Amino acid sequence: MDEIAIHVREAYKVFHKQSLFPWNRKNGHGEKKRVVAVDSISFDVSKGEIFGVLGPNGSGKSTLIRLIATLLLPDSGAVTVFGHDVVHDRIAVQRLINRVSVEASFFKKLSPMENLIFGARLYGLSAQQARVQILEILTRLGLERSTISKPVEEMSRGMQQKVAIARALLTRPAVLLMDEPTTGLDPRSKREVQALVRELRDQDETTILLTTHDMVEAEMLCDRIAIMDAGKIVALDTPEKLCAMVPSHNGRSPTLEDVFLELTGKKLIEEDDVE
Image (cartoon, rainbow, N blue to C red; front, side, top):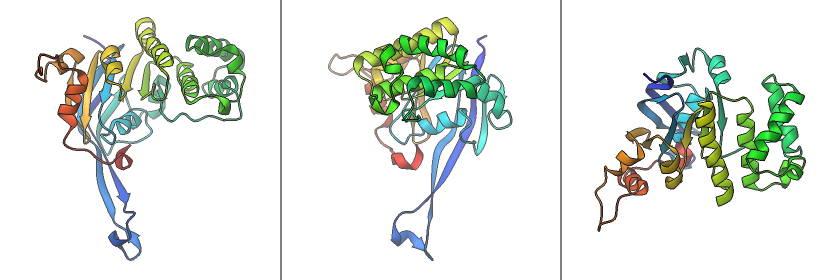
């Protein structure tokens, strides 16, 4: 039996949003709008699996990532990483995971090397030990050595995202949470990141949970895919079996995009309400 890396059971998360509209306010205070971001979902991810999560903006994908990353606490249900509960064993979970977000943050005046050494020291790595790993990872991601010493603020959005991925890889996490990691990357950079994702799984048995809006990327990389809509998982299977859920049209075989549109075309939540 495969070892379970991520275990999610009946995970539930609700937000209470303040109304921004004056006509909804009482006594000078806005009414609270109740938004269910993650609605009692359950799934397991095996060790070494690349597990994709697809869904429209506001479907709850990023909230799910934050629950697994211990950045948010579930209101009910259970989330564990290699048996460690995200509520009761947060430190143990944090030692096992790292996260790449579409919104990478850095000290903009510092170089990639300086940013990554700072991050490495937070994880207990020495500067000398980290420097060797940083050069290796950044080179694998296609960054030139001359770029590594320039301020981050002078780098393109795509190059900054590569630095964010490098920072996540420094700790050699058992579980890597990637929230739209290739957004904003040019085609060559996107392929380099995708190749690295496969390499991490194949060589290090890293478990990867990936959210993306790129259907081709999801179909190419993921062993299994969960499709979310309005906080719920509406389908979960291999890319091939998901595509078999939609009938062919005019002799054309259905794609993952066809499945996505079929299953998520009716209900959408405003992006700012959930993610």
